[in-house]
Length: 170
Image 1: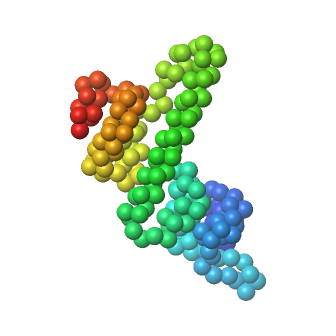
Image 2 (image 1 turned 30 degrees about the horizontal axis):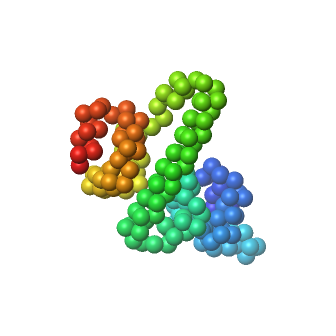
Image 3 (image 1 turned 90 degrees about the vertical axis):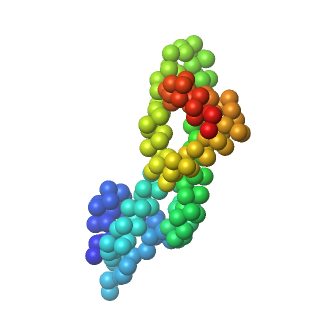
């Protein structure tokens, strides 16, 4: 059994963070010593690592509670997809901010740096639980809703024109 401090060190976070997760109901100690000290076991350590992984995805604490409490992988997939789309919107907003800065600086070569590649994008989608069929459906929806943005997105991934054409034809 680990104390709050030991658990925090083991997960490379602050003691305050562990206590915060307890305060919001995400992580409860498995027991308390007679003196009131919290004790955490393997189960709580695994749960904390899951919490930290979801936080690394930028998931809000309220959504993490929902992810951890539901045993339904379809519901988890839905929440992760929503977070993915939220991140995509944030990325687009940041790109617009970058473009505004480029206009102010009059240095268009700054936009030529590739941040997201095809392989990185696929890796992200797979880590979110997307199957090949899910990714195809994602492309279909994107193409149907915003064909010009879909084209621009695929081009931004440094995909060849031939492959872009094939993807858009799906």
